[in-house]
Image (tube, rainbow, N blue to C red; front, side, top):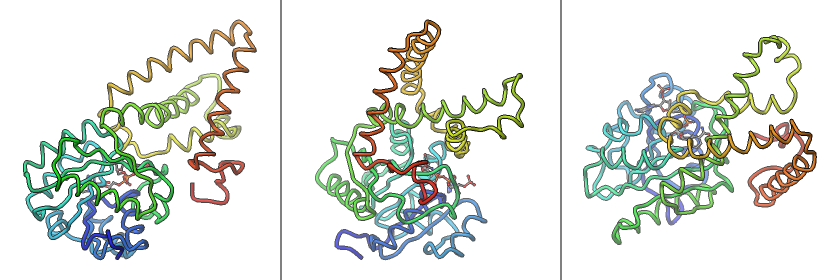
Length: 310
Ligand code: NAP
C-alpha cells in the first residue's frame, strides 16, 4: 500500500468503471482491502471469479469499515445506492462517485447522506470505453486521464483534507486531477462528451431510417466515419439515458449552439462556399492536433485501435 493509500475501500457497482478502479487500486497498491458490491448477483459472482476483491452480499457489508466508498452505478441510481450504504459507513469516511453528471448527482447524494460525519466528495474520471460490465474493465483505464473532483469549497479543514486524500488516491491510479464547480463540469462535459454521444446516436438512427438506403447497405458499405459513430452509439443505453435526463440544461444549451453552427454549414454547402468549409475543416484539424499534443489521444492511424485497448 502506498503512503496515501486507504486501508479499505468499497466499490458499489462492479461495471466497467468499478472493476477498473478495483484492478488499478490493487495494481498500484492504493488500497489494502477492496470490498465490492453490485445489485446483480451474476455480476457479483463474476467479480469473485475475476478476483477483483472481497465481494459482499449486501451494500452494508461492503461499506462497513471502509475509509472510502465509491459509487460506480448509473447516474439515475446514485441516490438509491447512497441510501443503501450510508447507515453502515464509518464516521470520518469519504463517500464519492464516478457519475458523468455532477450537479444533479451532488444534490442527490447530499439528500441521501444526512450525516455530518461522512465527507461527501463527488467526482468524475474522464476515462471510459463503450463497453460495460466487470469483464470490460482494465487497470490502465485511468492512466494519464483526468479525474475531476467537485468538493464543496465551503467545507472545513477535515473535509478539505479528505478531498486531498481522495485526489491522492486518483493520482495513485495514474490520473491527473482538477477541481471544478459541478455546474462548470456539466457544461464542459456537455460539449466534450454528452452532445457528441447524442450526435452519434442520431446519425446511426438517421442512417437506419433512410428509406432509400437499406439496412444491408448501411452495414455492408459502412465507411470509417460511420463505423466510428456506431462504436460510440454502442455505449450502455441506461448510462446515457441517465446522463441526458440529468444534464438537461447544459445539453440543451450546447445543442442550441450546435444546431446554429450546423445550419451555417448547410448554408455553406448549399451556396458552394468552399472557403468557409475549408477554413472550418482546417481549424478542426488543429484542434485534433492539440488533443494529441495534450496526450489525450493516440496519433496512430485508426486511433491506434488495432494495437491498443482504446
Ligand atoms: P456498467 O458497466 O453498466 O456498471 C454499472 C453496474 O452498477 C451494473 O452492474 C449495475 O447493475 C450496477 N448497479 C446499478 N444500480 C445499482 C445499485 N443501486 N446498487 C448496486 N449496483 C447497481 O456502468 P459503467 O460504465 O461502469 O458506469 C458507471 C458510472 O460511471 C456511471 O455513473 C457513468 O456515468 C460513469 N462513467 C462511465 C464512463 C464510461 O465510459 N462507461 C466513464 C466515466 C464515468 P444492473 O446492470 O443490474 O443495473
